[in-house]
Picture: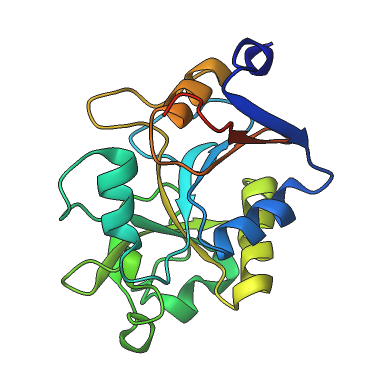
Length: 200
């Protein structure tokens, strides 16, 4: 219903493999609104209401701060990583996991140039580890992105703009998508793009 209400501004298609299709788009440079499953509770976006991007380009942080979040350029973004690959990129300092993005740990020195968009100026990151058991669809997206790029890490930030709450409903998600620089919206199994001349 929400999609139909915005049909003048958006185009959409159902994907047979949303994780594979979206991983390819992110690898090609798209900033993606990712709206899946139930609303999350707590201070962090953990893969159901997220804005996702490639962590490898140096300028990705600035691009999202300016075009999407509309906030100060110094603000950092967090990495989401497959749990089984976390220790390869981050010094977990004895943590077995960090599923709620509550711990700041060092990015391994030789990996800082690999994922600069999620590495703070002091060489750390507020890491989120994602297990297949905890969030299978988000894990599959990280896995698919890793298959495309060799890096099973995504820049993950909350699906909202500055001073606004995190999107709750499909209608919220589409509105936010239309009025920011988000390139693509993954809404359940639907891939949504903006029509030429639509809201923006």
